Length: 251
Image (cartoon, rainbow, N blue to C red; front, side):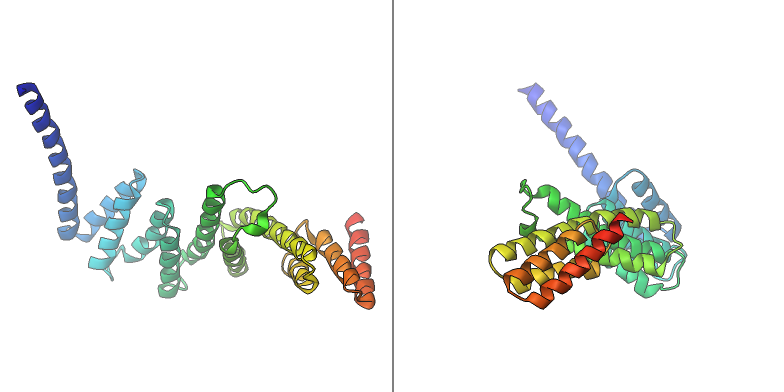
């Protein structure tokens, strides 16, 4: 019995010491000078302790809003939120940084991270879904579209940014994912005899994703839909565009 009591007090002591250590760190943040809090935040970021890094960075910004490290803390909060899997928080932090510092040297990073956060959120959602085969039309790809638009804006605003190549590689994945879904939805509408809706989906690909590998299929869907609607003139026009596209792709 004495052994169990000793073991209990030993474990309790370790847990208490751990809690005391955390409380000591919180107290340290609340009273420490600016540089010390910033250094503490850097230590936590480098060790991968992103939750506690967020705590330190938020405290730094709260206690020293006009201090030497305030802008850097705001930028690093974007990264800390992102690495902690808090993608919505990363977007909010990025938008806030852009609003406060539209001409800051790190503003391109904030725009890039907005798109990257939406991309990672989409990837996380896709990985959590059951295997659906080709049933992409049943998935909500709203985050993918948001990410694609955000990354497009980033590249347009900062074509010389060091993050452009990474943004392009993410956009390539998103473009094909979105286009594939639009094709499958259009095919679904064809089966349901919702031909106008099918044409609308095909037009979305042709207009917004012209470099995707699904443009030919989109044009074919338009031809099929107009044929089934007995819209002879529109079918002929769609066939001409399709044939022109095929010839151009062979050159």
